[in-house]
Length: 77
Image (cartoon, rainbow, N blue to C red; front, top):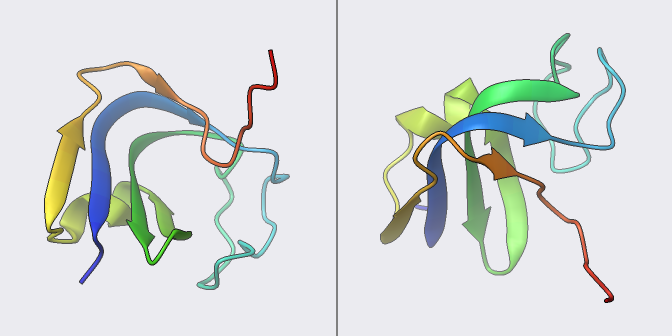
């Protein structure tokens, strides 16, 4: 079970190109660059991104309320 789920994002922007196999595992998704859904994390690692993440139960859920999520982005400013 994921520890954290960021749910209901209107856009999840990733650095992955469409059709790429996600670095966290799973199958290639043709829409991985920009997608609606959620981001699930377990032990500090991203385990699922996109619509399938919304199917998971997590210990804690943060509702993005239609916002934009940038998983893995580090803001150094």
